Amino acid sequence: LLFMLLWYMRLKRRGVSLAIPIAKTMRRMPLLKRLLEWSYYTMFARALGGMLKAGITLPDALQLLEKNHHARFYTAELAQAMRALQRGSSVATALSSCSFVPPLARTLIDTGERTGRLSEAFLHTAQYYDDALKREQALVAKMIEPIAIILMGVIVLVIALGLLLPILDS
Image (cartoon, one colour):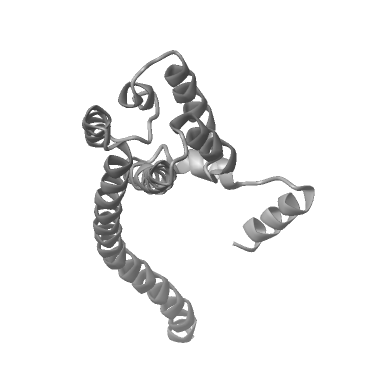
């Protein structure tokens, strides 16, 4: 643990960011990938829906999100969606190239686009996935708790045996 901390501090001094490699590693784990994508989608949809509701045009809003959003590994997907929109694709079709947009959200966005309520569609899907994200996080916490208790028990057992075995041998 100390070695990892020193290694991290050394990389930090050099200006190397570990955020992208850590996020890429998390995206390889199925449950964490879903949590990461839903988290990003809720932030994306809430911001985009709010901008559209405020009167900012869709291309301008997407460009702002692409430049200012924290998840750099989705920037290429947003740029691809912007190019599809410029070619005349629908919003749902353009966002289908984005891995972080869930299929249900695409369907609701398509419906919102056809009915002229795109900002509301983004805001409603953001709220839905935010609630789903909270449920998933609670489930993960419930799954991790027993594993952590067992791990702590094993650590205490090893420490106790390390202290008691030399006493019993003498």
